[in-house]
Structure formats: structure tokens, C-alpha cells
Amino acid sequence: MITPSEITASRVPASAYFGVSAIFHYLGPALAVVLFARVDVLGVVWLRIASAAVVFALWRRPWRLLARRTPAQRRLLLGLGVLLAAMNTAFYLAIARLPLATVGAIEFFGVIVLAAIGMRNGRNVIALVLAVGGVLALTDIQFAGAPLGFVFAVVNCALFMLYVVLGHRIANTGAGISGIDQIGAAMLIGALVATPYCLGAAVPAFTSPAALLAGIGVGICSSVIPYVTDQLAMARLRRHTFALMLSLLPAVATVIGIVVLDQVPTVQELIGIALIAGGVSIHQQAQENKEN
Image 1 (cartoon, rainbow, N blue to C red):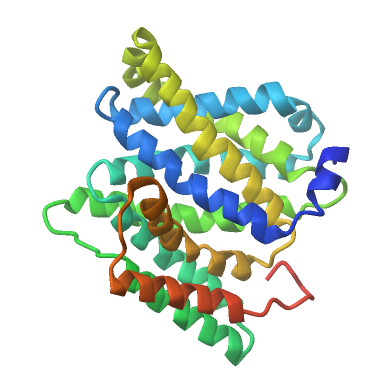
Image 2 (spheres, rainbow, N blue to C red; image 1 turned 120 degrees about the vertical axis):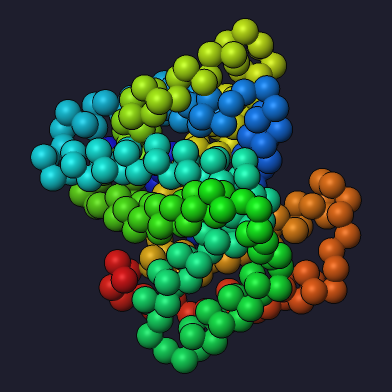
């Protein structure tokens, strides 16, 4: 059911929700990498998914949605739940072996495919080319010495593409069905899927209040705030437009580095940010057939 707060939320520009998602897309993994020193990677995966599932359960009570869905809709939510568990696992196993920027760059190649599929005019093709050039300028991809990390990063890339497709589908279900409730139901399923192979690795966190709180923080920053704002943005953006906007993620990471870490960008990085901003700014979203 669409709530009054979601009606109010629909008046906020989609780009604002995407901006919030982009910021937490990097804050969450940064906190997770720090937590790896205290808890095994799979343990952090469980803490992320389980804590997010608890937040959605208390906030949205998504099991009520599952009881009212058709068999086909339940299969979609089941698939999305399994996908979230697998994608988060592959992502964390990748960033435990490769730099975050490298994993993000590999992830973006799948986004390029989704963005290219929906291009209908020369202006949007130019926008895509500029965005791709900007990402390449921002990232320094290095695969040497971490072949397994590369494998996990490629798997994450494929799963992230599927997340964008399925996430966009549930965001545009219609008939008064909230995409946020659906993502909450999928998160509960994802927690059940991840528990058998991840819970044992998370046990050390229960003996350390600091590690447990950090794990909860990872869940909120990585699987609650971004997924909710993704749904609010996807509900009003064509799929390829959302995919193109994802090219802003490396630029956001650079800006966070400037503001939070006092990391001064190089001339190449500034050029990359300018190219991405230019690509996104000239992209034109068609009004019809938003499902493409």
C-alpha cells in the first residue's frame, strides 16, 4: 500500500534520491572494509543483510505483502531476495581482495550495457560516451595478483545488472503496491538465504559491541538507505536513464575523498568528473514507455 509519506516523497526530484543513494553506496562499503579487520567477510555480509532485514521488518512489516501476492509476484520477490544475498556476498568477497574503485569500475561495465540498450537518439549516445570516458579517467583498474577477486567482481557486475532490472520492475509494479515494501520482503528472504553460510562467520561480532554496532551501521548505510532511495528514483526514471546516472558513483567517491579525507584530486580525475557531469547533463529522458 502506498502511504501518505510516499506520496509526499514522490514530489522530491528523482535526482535527489539518486544522490543520497550514491553517497551511501560508498560510505557503507568503506565502513565494511574497516570491519573486515574484526569480522570475517561472510560475517560482515550476514550483519549487513540481517540488520537491514530487521529494519525493514520493524518499519514496513513486509510479510503482510507476501501473503497477498500472486504466485508469480512471490517468485519475483524470491528471486530478488536470492539475488540480494548473492550480490552482496560477491561484492564483499571482491572488495576484500581488490581496491573498491577497481570493483566499482568493473561493476560499471554492466551498467554500460543497460544504458546502451535504451539509447534512442544521438544525443543520448554522446551522453553515454562522455560518461564512459569519465569513468575510465577516474578509475585505475589493476587485476594483477588477485585473480579470485576479479572473478568475484565480474560475478557482482552480472548480479548488479540483474538488480537494476528487477529493482526497476518492482518500483513500477503499480496497482498501489509499494516498491519499498517489496524490497523489504526481498531483504527478509535474502537474510534467510544468507544465514546458513554466513551466520557462523558473524558470531565474533556478538562478543564485541563496537563490531556489532558497526555491522548494523553497514546494513543501514548499504542496504536500507540506498535501496529505499533507489526505489524512489527508479519509480520515475527509465531503466537506461538510471543506469547512466550510476556513472556518477566514481565521481561521488572522489568528492567524498575531497570533503572527508582531504584527498586532492588529480587533473585527470577532475577531467573525469567533468566528463561524467557533462554526459548526465545532456542525457534526455523520453517520457513514453518508461519500462525501456
